[in-house]
Length: 180
Image 1: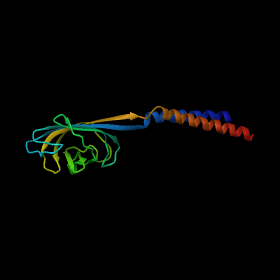
Image 2: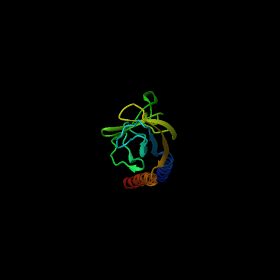
Image 3: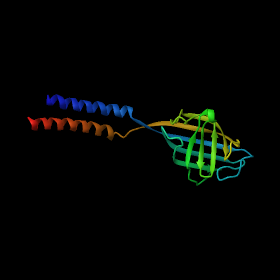
Image 4: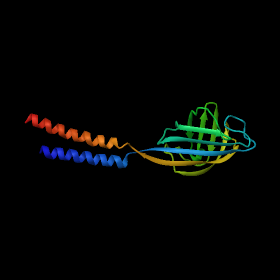
């Protein structure tokens, strides 16, 4: 009986470890975009008449809305803009879609498809967009590229689970031996 318990514990540990390694996924998504500011664009640290802007950032999916981002970069005419981003707020297409980039007192609005208002980023692809700064008045055109990628959990977690279940089986066997 003890041998069977140990065998079943090890089998269960191996099964759970295999299932965890195949199903448990954490996603980190990459968003980037380009903005071509038109002649009527306001002059700010993030926009200017006839200038080109580029941005990129990583975001965890699923995410909170508004979301915090990592590895954020923004440049205007190939010059990096050094300003901390507060958050990114996603919108459904009913609310004109895409997202707002919040930088304290300046907001860059991107209008287009819904890529994250539900808390899950996606689908991947390229989305045409219109842009504005601090108002809903469109002053730029461009697009947003969304790369959705799943990152598997570290291999040590399934192995740890299998080892823990195996130790439980050995402990039960040792306890029964002492009681006998």
